[in-house]
Length: 198
Picture 1 (cartoon, rainbow, N blue to C red):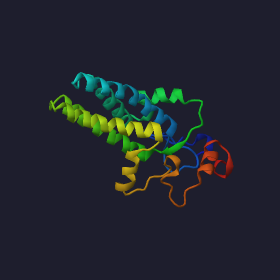
Picture 2 (picture 1 turned 90 degrees about the vertical axis):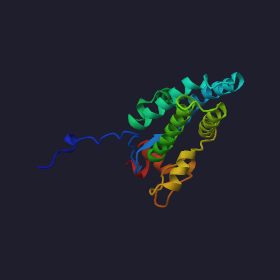
Picture 3 (picture 1 turned 90 degrees about the horizontal axis):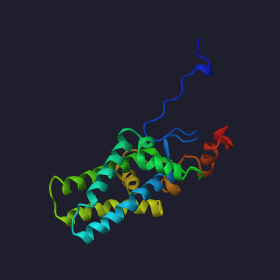
Picture 4 (picture 1 turned 120 degrees about the horizontal axis):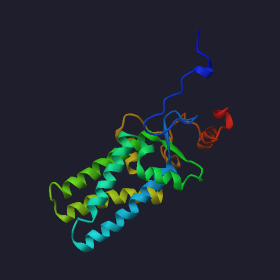
């Protein structure tokens, strides 16, 4: 005898992102991601300028540690446990979500973690010259600024170029593939309206 619908097990929530009707892959709220990027960028740029004026990388060390830990939590434990995303979620709670594919965001976060870890190792363990630390941190801050200010996810673009699986549901429809539902239909589906949400 088949189990009744009421007794059927609920679909497991993915580690990164969430399942939204009308989307074929787990998705993440782009507004949360951009707000989190801004929350990381603001103290980062302040400490970056401080390091330049002080002539030492010491001000950047605590920020680098926080950045690496935040990215590691995103990719290992999941986006809902990352501190920056948790705060960003509260900030944009009243805004209408803009769902984007979780796989390309995960790729971008792995990239951010790798870059942050490289910068921390260069600064602490390898005692690299200040200009090396500034170059690495400057690149990370540039990527954060592009995402928070313009919605440009460089890691997502790299995933589109190097991954065998084409990304879906990019911010602004920049990576739409044939056969996916138009953005307005997917939005209606996520709100429980329209043909996909019925």
